[in-house]
Image (cartoon, rainbow, N blue to C red):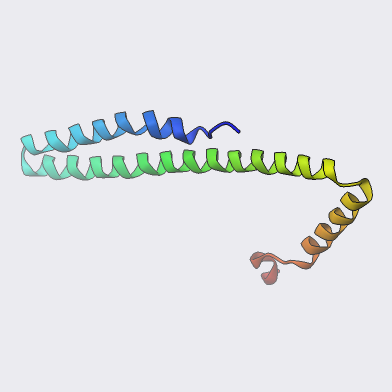
Length: 108
């Protein structure tokens, strides 16, 4: 299996963001106090949101990678079983889904 996109994102994605944040933090102390505080908090917010965006991208790429791995495992597993075994497993999973309730279904 190929590596998920998050490895490339980790390698190249954070460098420009951290560089911009570092420059804005370092240059914020050249000006008066009002401007210093404003740029300091803006750069902190920028770092926070950029890290959240990158974390979201990493999570999505990891979930996509897991989905591909599971589909591959499922394909291999179904090739090894007979049709009647696959039907029995499908019916059992459907029964489990019908019997399990999600937390929001208890309020309905």
